[in-house]
Image (cartoon, rainbow, N blue to C red):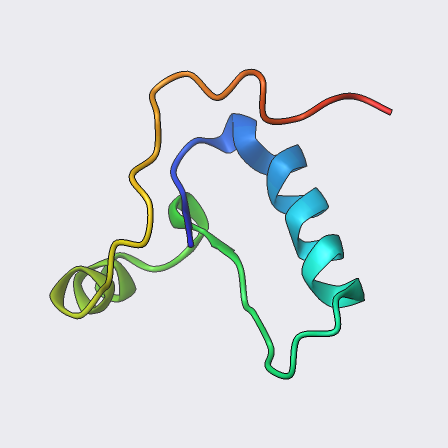
Length: 65
């Protein structure tokens, strides 16, 4: 999963917690795009699968509290 903006840090934390608490039979790693090395950006771009296109305005994706 790619989170491109630093402002999405709260959403990343919430999603990490949800995956940690889930009963999925596999591990899900979430990394913020801006925190990973540039060389890893190239590796991801070369071999990635788009599952869902993001939208430009995701201000509704996190409810406080």
